[in-house]
Length: 328
Image (cartoon, rainbow, N blue to C red; front, side):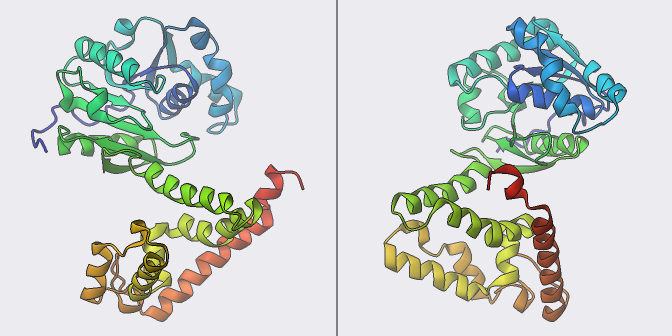
């Protein structure tokens, strides 16, 4: 990986950001940036999309502010602009959110590369395309970065920071600093199909589709199983900390090996990273070390774990989110 320091300083408070693409995601991203005090230029060749921005963005802005005056002030920080050359003037960041078509993105980034000074960060919101493919026609690829929002992007706080072999580490750090400035959390990963979040998400969904195809479980039972077991634990702790808190690594490895023997599916074979933890005796919270290190006595960890999970499940029961979204 290129270790050349990225020359752009940290994101300037109140600086100008150009968002290219005024569709669904562009609308969300522009509104979020405006909420956090940035001046936003929203660019789209479709005049209708620009004309309808304020109407479409108002419900998004309402999630940040309740007073009409505050919402109006937020939306006023977004300036529509049809000309790309005009839109990128004075921007420290250009964030692309156009249709997910490789040729379209390649042509756009080649044009942005020619229009913008070298210190301007060129980011893509792609959800599936590789950064190296998108930047195939870009001369100054060291300023390319993936900043992928997860729908609904103004509420879901994690943003994927996608890098390629040509991405300087300092640009990833810059991305983290910028994302922190909008009260989100950057999660970095190298480019690969699915990146990080979709790779994990669709591993689960693909297995669920297979369960339904085979008639093993119903829609309602699958959703209830995840919602009342896996889901709350993942929401509180994520998958690796959850494993540390609830099961010994020896058991986790035994389960994966058993599934591999029964199914022949290589995806279930215990991975070297898990076997290494077992060999080191890093079995999880019960031993004070797993994926994470634990300093408190195991009994106290279990008590706090159970308290957090009970509180979340009670909160979910009281609000009945499923009943509010679907008919009885």
